[in-house]
Length: 200
Image 1 (cartoon, rainbow, N blue to C red):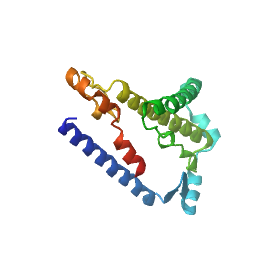
Image 2 (image 1 turned 90 degrees about the horizontal axis):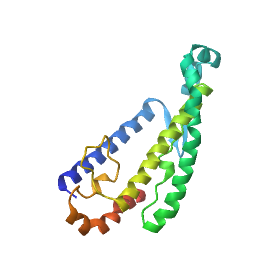
Image 3 (image 1 turned 135 degrees about the vertical axis):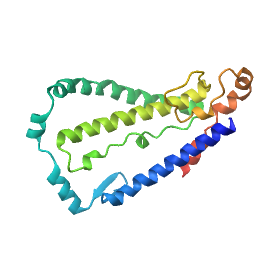
C-alpha cells in the first residue's frame, strides 16, 4: 500500500480514537455510566428527564399529518431489513470460515440504547430503537461487504467514492495489472489489523 495512504488511514484511526474519548467525556457531563450494555443515569437526572417527557396525547396532536401517514412506509422496511440481517449473518458464518476472513461482530454495530432515556415517550423510544437497529444493520452489512470485497476483488475504483469502507486502504491500485497478479493472494489474507483490534 502507498505510504502516504497508509499514513492518512492511520491518522484517521487516531482521530476516531480522539472522538471516542470526547464522547466518553460526555458521560460525566450528563451524569451517566455505561455498565456492560446498560446505561445508568444518576437518580436526580432520571427525575429531571421524566419531568421533560412529552406525554402521548400532545405528542400525537402536534405531529404532522404527513409524518403520521408516512410512518407505515418506514416500518414496512423493517421486514426486508430483518431478512437482510438474517441472510448476511448466515452468509458470513458460512463463507468467512471457508475464506479465512475474521467474522464481523454484529453487536459492535447494532447498538440500541435510547430506551434508557426517560425524557423520551414510548413512541420516541420505539422510533429511536428502529433507527439504532437500522443504521447499525447498514454499518454491519457494509463491514461484511467490505471484507468480502477485500477477498474477492480488492481493487480501488477509478472514480471518486462518496465514502470509503474500512478495508479500502488495503486495496490494489486501479489499472495495476502486474500488482494485482503479484499481490492478490497477500491482500486476500491481510486481516491482521482486525485480529489486533479484536485482541485490544
